[in-house]
Image (tube, rainbow over all chains, first blue to last red; front, side, top):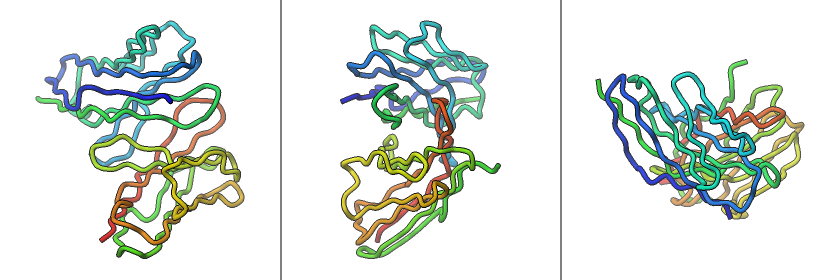
Length: 115
Length: 113
């Protein structure tokens, strides 16, 4: 069975600085998708970024980028120029490309942003 | 389109009562998902539909839980004979064709007393 591990329960960063959130996963599949979701205190989950496993190029979305290391099964999220509005829970998630459409989530990392 | 709507936002119920939650997905989305999230944890998959067909159910979904999606539009999740362990946030999400990521609703927080 696939698992997703987020080993940092909490992280903090100063406004305008850069922070990296870690995620590792375990799978025997070769084709899959990885996601980062943000859950602000209002609790509505928002998709931050998506990566297809067959693509070597790391995904980027404005200030958000990932470091996808397929062999190491690592998928970290880098937030550049951090803003107060980035404060939230961040969840890493795995999705098979073949067998199912469900997401498997990690336990999350709470990010605090200090002015 | 106002996104994914869930109703109610909060529900307090006594142990042993039945509760039903509703989810209205984005209208053109054919896939609809239910997840449960407890405090400090990531969401756990419960079940999902493609149109009106329920394609997968988690082993977490005991026989007290049932979900429907009549006509492939809105969905309901019913919990019968609620237990204190059912207290959680119940999240609904929908997705259109392709794999672009879910759109989540704001959730229904269930408290069983």
